[in-house]
Image (cartoon, rainbow, N blue to C red; front, side):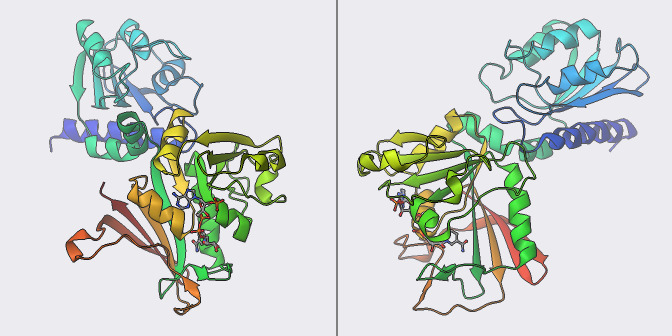
Length: 364
Ligand SMILES: NC(=O)c1ccc[n+]([C@@H]2O[C@H](COP(=O)([O-])OP(=O)(O)OC[C@H]3O[C@@H](n4cnc5c(N)ncnc54)[C@H](OP(=O)(O)O)[C@@H]3O)[C@@H](O)[C@H]2O)c1
């Protein structure tokens, strides 16, 4: 790699690292960072998109300019926007700034922008270099990209289990399988997500809080998917001062007379079947890029079958629950041949005190 391409990679990686500071706060928007160099390649400004509704990364960088950008260059991890949204088009600002060259890592999958921003920059005489640090940029914004292509929220399924692969006792007792450090890690990692989903039975058995314990404001949306609407009168999820809660019910099976028992502060939406894909679509429409499924075996199996899960996080504790009286993380997938089973890829393994955490991707 030449000295100048090493320098360019360094600046694009800086833009990506700035972008990642917006993790968990930018949905429905992507995470974007921008760096501006003067004509002598000295850093004169940087910025990132802090949260949805706030100025875009490019605008933030222009606001922070220490000197004239004329003849300089810009590094940005996503194609600049060219449409009027909550904020003015970034392309216009870049053109009027007199910047000579722009390095863009990846095109924006948003149909309102995709390729059009680059076209306008080129038409204004700005040199455009597309593709620098593409792999890293695709990884950073994979949930945003997935949602834009599929109209579904990117799903991560998380569960905790014993070393013999059991998630709790059949009488519903599952507190606690993993150690305190693993549980704190779960609380803090919830901050990366726009919503946390469970099924009605986990609500009845566990009465969870599903919050980051104050690490993120506002807290992620808490979602309960129910076929019956037979939910407890008292529940931690009904305390909307902690976080917002949304109940989604299947109108083809639910007893709608139970609706009156749900507190007024809780939002309710109905869908026409128990297909978890409807949840992924509904949450994407509400602006969620990335959602965490923290459900039990029945909803987890249905969510995998309907391609709602793109990644998994498993915590494995050195405990044995035994067979008959304990639960598997999944129900039956009806596999009969080894070529049918679900194979995971990109696995990362880490130790959390004496627990093991495995993160993997699912191909679907
Ligand atoms: N160790 C762990 O990581 C972990 C995590 C979560 C849960 N758990 C344990 O898992 C147990 C609950 O398991 P579960 O499988 O009943 O979990 P669940 O998360 O409650 O999912 C099942 C419930 O989801 C609703 N649902 C909506 N659409 C569905 C569909 N297509 N298929 C299946 N369910 C659908 C139903 O609610 P309604 O009944 O309201 O209609 C159903 O009872 C609890 O004992 C809990 O402690 C363990």
